[in-house]
Amino acid sequence: MSPLHVFARATSVVLLLTTLMARAHAQEPVKFVSKPPNCQNTSGPFDRWLQGVRQEALKRGIHQPTLTAALDGLTEDRDIIRIDRGQSFFAQSFLDFQAKLATSNRVSSGKEKMRQHAAIFQREEAQFGVPAAVITAFWALESDFGSGMGKRPVMRSLATLAWDCRRGEMFREELFAALQIVDRGDLMPSEMISSWAGELGQTQMLPTLYLKYAVDFDGDGKRNLFKSAPDIIGSTGNFIKSLGWTRGQPWLVEVRVPSKFSWEKAGLDIKQPTAAWAKQGITLANGQPLAADQLEASLVLLQGRGGPAFLAYPNFKVFTEWNQSLNYAVTAAYLATRIEGAPPLNRGPAPATPLPPEAIKDLQTVLIRAGHSLAEADGKLGYATRAAIRQAQLTAGLPADGYPSLDLLDRLRAKR
Image (cartoon, rainbow, N blue to C red; front, side, top):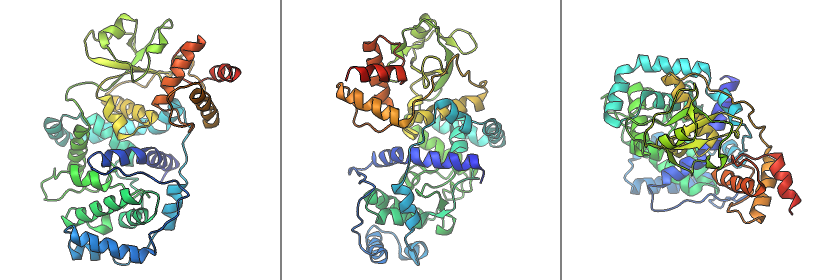
């Protein structure tokens, strides 16, 4: 596995797991809450705990041969517990992040996949409405089209995480879902391999999502997202549709913003018709005019007013549902536009230098003390932090693009 792919999978798992948890459990009546990384396991010995899982699985209608094939000889993997409790935040600027993930090789490979499976993609889009380039972008980022799905046995990973105290409730349901997938004949335990978090297949679905959204698109009576390109394409389209995709609408367009602009209008929480953005001087990245329509969009500036700029349309919400990290979501959406034929992005005249996580944490602490609605100072530049920064910039008389700077931090510190 290449160093780039190791980075991509590690980044995807760390940034994606929280979103997957929320998304998987949006369908459940019970909300599962993660415990702190230093929680103490009270489940007892693994083998005794696993016996209780067997008994509950039988009550849920899972057959004994499935349990024998999937659970016999299973032991806990302490390395997975160490990884789960030691997750770190990847402090990457958007430009650095997308450069590592939205590579020219993934663009060309994505285009080749679209040519190779053109008829299948056409059938998927007719049924679910999701463009081939969008599915292909996620397929590329999640596993490099199957070359990087991980090497750990899924059942062992899920059982270990279900036994552990930190995410036990959540992963217990994922373990039962994985057993159901085997029980209904879609997969054999031996072919279920993944990264440490137990996602399945080439577009990396947690078992609860696999169970609900995987479709038999090749007609062989099984849903195999490890080996069947038709099943991968159809299932991913089905899942993306469930996240709210609107057929025939755009998702992300790179734009050019005039130097004299009301920067406080940037942010996913601010929406205007495309025609309104055009009246304010925003054009396509190549200088051509925007479509003068009423489709609402938000201006996204991931590295401040001097960096690349995008208009994000309602379909962009699907990318943030897939992964709450804005860097990941915009990278995936941008990669989809590249696969569809868009040129490489413009880095902007002067992209802002990102602050390190500790400086962002300090800034968040100051913002919280000033009364801004932030849950915690975690060093992550998320939606709420950007909105708070924008308000603080307005108060300080700075261009309010929602991106942190040392200038803003120094001004806020001076007011302590």
